[in-house]
Length: 348
Image 1 (tube, rainbow, N blue to C red):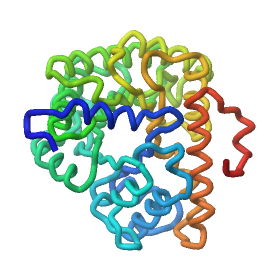
Image 2: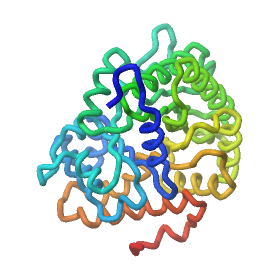
Image 3: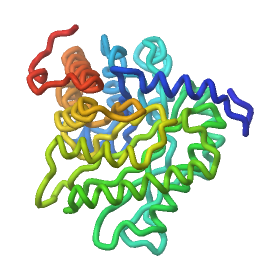
């Protein structure tokens, strides 16, 4: 592990490249305990540590998942849990050549004197936590900032404060030997158009990369996890797949330096199929100097969770569903996904 204040750039770059490897992406299994509770409640299940562990262990031990998943973002509880065979979750992932990661932010909280806007907490003890997570096996981490679009929103102070926090997080993480996944998410909630999403996303990314440069963050040793440029959930006119892909690429080419090795999109409020189709079209259109990949949560897990349903007898079926979803996104990494593949369930 690097000495405090001195980052190992070669190690960071190697990890970042491995996470953004062709044909692969990241599983975001870092739902907080309350969020995971909501998912379990939809299945009529209690929010118990054992059930949370069983579902995540089901995914992490799925045969063939390592062919399409390069890394997994864990929640603090999960990183510390032992699987049914006594091994730690990080050990299980490492045994398959999958890189363990960890969510390190303290969640988005209301900003002072900024109604409707939020700032992510967690910087105060971040250096100490990153050092511990490294010892527990994590090799990358993630920090999410949320930007709300609405009447008069976002404000410049909110965007700047979140950009500064992301940059501080990234610097601290790199000094601890962890590749930071920088996640500025312009939320899909609202009625705004794809054009408005473009404006806010461009502004946010410009602020973020300016802040990263100010703090000397080593860009070849980070990954970016942005939203796609997309219409709001309740927009009057929703942009199609081709427009989302072209506008997202236009925005990224205007804001993201070529030194960044990978762009790992978040799925936001998209369905599993939508998230895969958008990623596929971007790669088919021809991206930029970076790998265009995925770091999906619900868009990789939702069908598997419903198939599992809290019953150990369903584990194999849930694993098959998960691996198929990962396989489809792996195909989308090359621009080779087609809607007809949704019904193909044979392993390859």
